[in-house]
Amino acid sequence: MILLTGFEPFGGETVNPSWLAVRQTADKLNAEGVPATAVELPCVFHESIETLRRAIADHGPELVLCVGQAGGRDGVSLERIAINIDDARIPDNKGNQPIDSSVSAGGPAAYFSTLPIKQCLGDIGGAGIPAMVSQTAGTYVCNHVFYGLMDLLATQNDGARGGFIHVPFSTEQASVHNAPGMEVADMASALRIIALTSQATTSDLRLPAGAEH
Image (cartoon, rainbow, N blue to C red; front, side, top):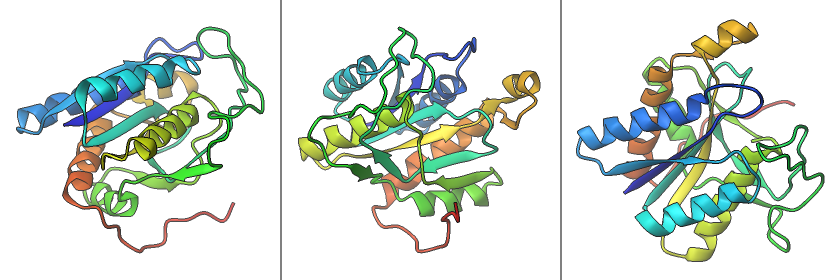
């Protein structure tokens, strides 16, 4: 079973392409005989992790792909590392705005994704979809969920793997913000590739995909 999660809208937006894309992805995978389900997370600190925890308990996935929106980026971002910090520039959807707080008190400083992110990068690029490895998922609810996911998987010890992917604005949002965007269908195609590649391999490629700053 593959569990995909997306977020509800936040920051004044009326849609969140992460949720639209994971729904399409789950439909694509199920149509191909690959069991998958999509769950919407609230854009709320702590509640989002609790919703994710319940979804993992309910579905028992072997693979978890959490997805969020990164408006302004110009491609699908495979996140490398989750850090144990909440530092919210804007309030979440219930008005919470933690500053310099731990996601998990006493937890490790960081977790790495357990997805083969560079193999996924190559496969997405081969499909002609813009993609990159990202070194930061921010310090808002996306990183909060990414860290929470990896902490859950690390402490369950059941062999499940997972990671976090950011998608850009949808083309409709991009036209409003005068920013880069992507069709939701292309986001879903990229997420399908990530899911299938991650199912097929636990090893990763060695290729340059880092950043100078």
